[in-house]
Length: 587
Ligand SMILES: Cc1cc2nc3c(=O)[nH]c(=O)nc-3n(C[C@H](O)[C@H](O)[C@H](O)COP(=O)(O)OP(=O)(O)OC[C@H]3O[C@@H](n4cnc5c(N)ncnc54)[C@H](O)[C@@H]3O)c2cc1C
Image 1: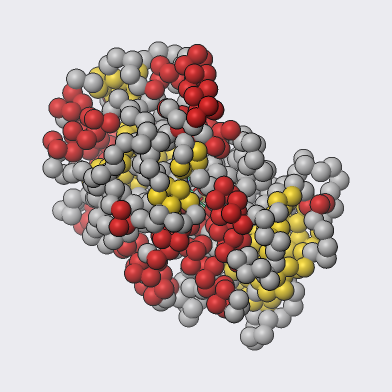
Image 2: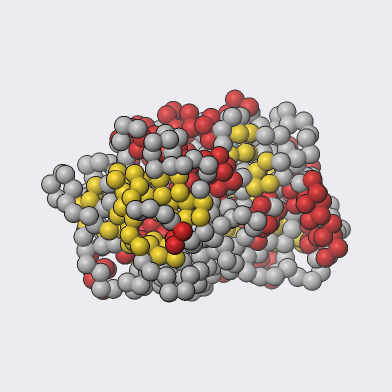
């Protein structure tokens, strides 16, 4: 059952498990643990309910769920020194389903090399792809695209699950640029067509069709799937507008020197219930923190788990000294390379017209078809820097292996420039370049000991030469792609003087620093390491080092960022975490 405020929670507030954050990972674990009817789980979600939230349902509206809405935590990054001191929005889902309700629906799993690196870093072979691939079947329900077209050759069925929880689908609404994208894969041998972009042990390099977390014209989130399928279970209680302010130390653990954390303090989210009191809920077995890469790092520190020098500065007593909490923040970046195109076939002319938008929305309302029933993006590609690139003379290749990409290009049939409104006239195409193997690392620190103060988010983007060079090479490559015959009669040229004049390496670098922002994939702030390692925050079984009864299950535990979009890796991680927890507690 889902209830709308902490005041409605009945009973003694003692559960087998308490899950902090009803987001992407948290709802997977809640669903899996309550498969046993004798198990009780309380999920505390600070965000709002996703029920009736149109922007979170319509796939095309993915980019409208955030930023600066009630469904967003509305964070910004601190001024970024590698980006001319700029600051910008840093969206995170503040809604049931978390960022899986707020993301852009792109769905992939990480490469086998990503998972094998995790296995090797953590010393737990259970994280290797050969073990993790079983969870694809449990997680995924591949469904036909909304237009019902023949998808032979557009995905490889053996790589997918058809009976799992989350619907995943191929594009079902043709965009003007689609045939040109396919044509260009025949013209440029370095960017061949890739039949399936889900990754795993299938080669991800090349250009192919986006796979989206949706089905029947509607977004699939962890809430509309895992939770919806479990919500009737009597053992499950989900509270929205419930803000966890602290993990409570409940005494010494059984192992010498450890502390147990089997309780949490929570209250109604600010602005939802005037004068709300703080409640304490207790877990018989475990507290599972799934508050995401920002929320988890913040909450651990608020609870006295972190770097004692930093905690002291904001008046918090250290219970577990760990200098790695909130460190190692790693994120993919987004650079929107804008081009003007001929004609009026891009989405821009539709989106400028109230009548056309109303028509498309009516069509979606009536039968969940048409332009809005589809992801805003249909095609993307993955590439590596050439192995003889100069940068490898000074930087070790940060990719997890020779088959994993360094950068990504996303073909967008419209003007896409976060924070900058669409011009009143003109048709556009945006070639987004994403850095997939960043070497910059940042931090999430507390601003104060007030749990409602936003933390200081400093990803330190573009503070290494590798990161700038990889994006720069991506910019050159996308210019070449759009200069190929497939696009020659369509694309006019770069839009905006900064892009148009970025020709030399130095000019491109300055353009990159002036425009790059986030593609919303932060990981690493509660990094996994080997059970025997003194560095890192969680063990390979996701227990927090030095504690008992406390685990972290969310994107924050990835020590290296997967080289694909991150929701799929989070889903697989949460599936295995559920098995680990069930086994540990002999459910
Ligand atoms: C705008 C955007 C677009 C994206 N696009 C894509 C995409 O197209 N494809 C892709 O693969 N990935 C995408 N991502 C990334 C992906 O969605 C995330 O990596 C993933 O969902 C993170 O899962 P999580 O469980 O770690 O965190 P989340 O899903 O963010 O869950 C954390 C939950 O904890 C809650 N919470 C936090 N603090 C507290 C607290 N103190 N008390 C109670 N609750 C709390 C939050 O409200 C949230 O619901 C996107 C993300 C965003 C924000």
